[in-house]
Image (cartoon, rainbow, N blue to C red; front, side, top):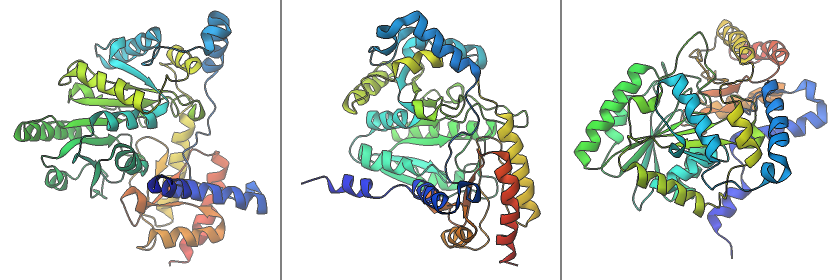
Length: 395
């Protein structure tokens, strides 16, 4: 009677969500202050005041009909122009309104890209560690195959030897996520240059472009004065999927975009395919109020210095306790190796202390755990004592 694959998806939350829901149940039993929940990437820093001011501005200037009415399916033209101008100022690009398609966050952007590209037999490649929902979006949403390249666990850059072995004539696109969820690593300029060269060579060999899908919700969350390469400048066949969920602390408002550069192979057809995918997925238009709000705040960010403080505190504390981990360069996750080979068992043992961590298995990286540090700093300070108790069990 029903699609069994959809029933299966609906009856089982993602591992992240399962742990998050467990934490809520435990909080009701023992008090929220006694739960050390590091499961979900829900920003703890408030949106900047400019967001509040932009909401008032839109309501005043547009009125109730304009504020809440439909926009064009691809998004309001003025909104898309402002976003283009912002990127051009910051990255030295030359985008315009018709390079952009506004979406209901980065998840919708990714889903539209996969649907726009996927044909029977196509494969999408991703390097571990990766956001687990990619598998759902690619396989259940677009009917394609997700091919996972083993992680470089020393630095969490791309393992190019294994990537090249994974590429084949069925490869339609590669997905990258930098800064990365769950490792916090930024792909260096050298990595992006090497990737662009490899994909260019393989595209020529196979007689069709291999596209790049750059998932960038953490683009503004970078630390230590680092800069992030803007990928379209290195590889023109790149779709950029962006969300304001993290940069402006607006995860529940679901606003983002897809960028399709003019330099892409058959760019106009690519953009039409994105529009068609949005139509089949029922994306009438992205939320009209927050399209306009984002366009006024596109150069702003929430106070990301708090996340940098949390990163330093947690990284230094874990290293002191004997954990092995790569220092995050961005986002708000750290991805240490678990203190036993079975990360699922390790996370279950951590639950004895009401310490909620996410095993790395679903991220394509067994033996690691994801810790989300977009939490109040006080929680990290208190949790380090609990981490110490847990670590003591392995000595």
